[in-house]
Image 1 (cartoon, helix red, strand yellow):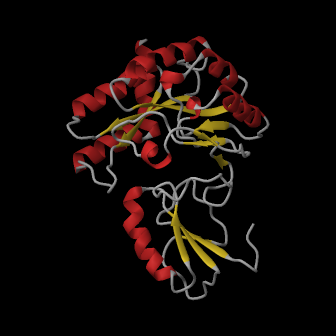
Image 2: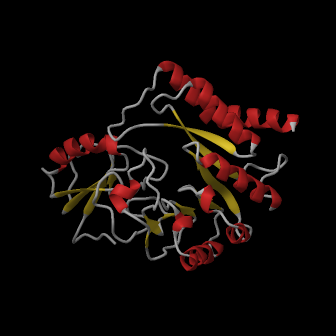
Length: 283
């Protein structure tokens, strides 16, 4: 907890839905009356690292600066709620055993490291289902105590989904569970996950879309036709698709006006909801 003896200003290169917003949070260069003992610059995306360095130069005139966050290698300790993420978001593990070509998580955090479980209702773990069974059960035990609807924004890996996971999910008041269709290898596992969720009543054409799926688009050699095919396939499986545009470590991609228009269409809940409704009518 911050106090008058040790004021820490937290600076963020950009604001997201998860960014805290209290009296010691800033989103740019220091103001005329800013005073602090320490400055912590938290970087979520690797393509913001250069901006963070420029911010550090400015804030260093106020107080000593530390740069950390998921985009850096300085984000490996225990998770403290409400400091660098808004209250409600929590991280109970770091790392992932997979080595996907487009993902830097294993390089930064290695295999799974289980953390102390802190209260929250939006799980941001890189790969929760890769944790031990006891840790997963303890996370769900914590979630059952929360008064807010539960989200797994960090995503659940379809390949690792088992029936006992489904049984635990059914005990929660869910707002959203997220899967991912990043590579062709994911497809078979998404089919299995869809069948399990349908059997449990968690995917139903007349039910609110709890089960969602991030679909990676716009990576090298991708095409509009192939991207749309993947998105429609996800709809046919009963998941609500969410188009996520590929970016490399420097934030570079093949995004053109056409790709931007395509992504906005497939990331708009109203438009995608209409596409879901059309698909359900045909089923």
